[in-house]
Image (cartoon, rainbow, N blue to C red; front, side, top):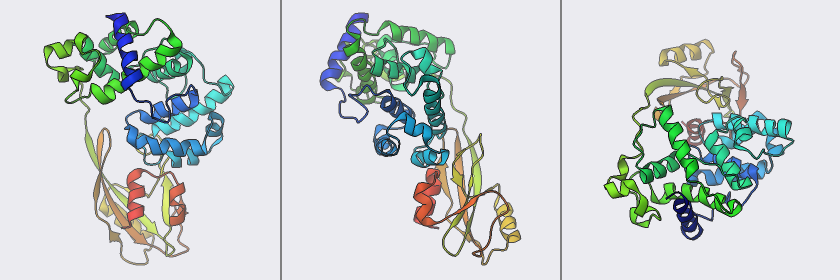
Length: 346
């Protein structure tokens, strides 16, 4: 099955796989790396616009390394999982400092860079340098566990290690310059379009004849992973100081923490704390409560309560921050819910 599997994936991808995405059909490691980081936890349809805008501002790794933190966070604003943007910037600087501006070719060296895990390193090495390197993102785990009937619990590091070994066994062994990029892309395409989490299109799959899960008639039982995320909730009261010219006072969120490095209104733990702070700083009129709304993070539900507090033109809060006029909001790194709040008014 080993050689047949990779041949079937390569042949299928050549005819039926995705070929239109802007980061495909290139061996530019910078562009491939950027797309791989953006696509972590994010759908292709969302990434497309961000990818193009990012390349317009930072067409090379040198441009990204030279950009300011604020520029990078503004470009990433709304894409979520902001640690990716911080690691992206750090990684670009290390590529310049350690490797003279050229991405290394091996999985080991790539994995030593900030924000590049084993799977992302494998994708870059495969696509750009024809290395015989496996990937194991969520889509590929689903394909492999179903085809192999892999029943070990992937919540276990031992099971994950075992699946990595099996993934490497299935890699192409000939004409790597052609076959490795197509195989890697084919595995991604299979997981995204055919071997989906719910209601997979098994009859369109090129390897359904060898697929254990298909023979069992229960593909959705794979992959097995028992560990569940523990969710929590929090209420944030957003103190929206506003001058007569419309400027809002914004602070940079501390690291580590939610929205670290992005700009946001001051956050209070309760309505009482917010109103006390507003009263101490002499609002020019009564605070205006906006509609509360929910923002869902991976591990936490954030219940956001915006309160607009009008202040005099010469008012400056005691804590570090800056006044930002409405015309400047698009150029500031804002979390998606904060940007939406400002744009729609409250």
